[in-house]
Image (cartoon, rainbow, N blue to C red; front, side):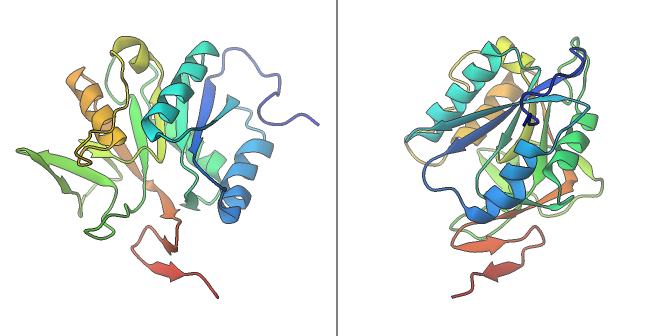
Amino acid sequence: MPTAWDNKIDSNIPKIGVCIPYFGNLNLEWIEMTYISLLYKPANWCQKVAFLCKVPSISVSRDMLIKQALQQNCDYVFFIDTDLIFEDPSDPNIALYQLYQKINKSKDSKDKKIISGLYRAKKDTGFNYAMWMKHESSFLPITEWKDNFIRVDVAGLGCCLIDTDIFKNIQRPYFKWEESGEMSEDFYFFQHAKNNGYDLHVLTDIKLSHLGSIKVKCDGTIVYHEM
């Protein structure tokens, strides 16, 4: 039976590489709510191609996924991490379409080429939204905003649509985890892209829950697993 990955669609529609880095056993809730929907639910507005990569380093994994997507001539890559499930909209295909509607299709522009969804980060300092603005030599979490489409300096790469032209115009490494542990691969990428003229935007209408030993919903509610 054909799936969303191999359906024959008009060549004029965008080709999106769905890039999934993973490191161990996949969360069953994620498989049911995110992976299966992306895999088996057709999308008549785009051609989806799945890329999965399991390696010890997140930086190497993301880099290898980009390499595969470029080899397959993908117009965009959609990073989706294996610990995120969609709240609103609950269908990841609808969320992907909404992200795509916001991205700048012009080849002559560098504006609005990276669009992220909204979710909570899991850090020692708490569960702030996974988006930050640079302030002097540090990054401050964003806690308030007015519009549903905002420019930020850094976000997580857990749910992010990126025009692949960016990777043709910036130098490698695209992703790098600093030895100090203070600069993760997503911080590195977004700063690298920004230094080359590409800004990051967050579409706050796309809301996700962050899975793990606990589930952190987008509004900050913590859901504990039943014993």
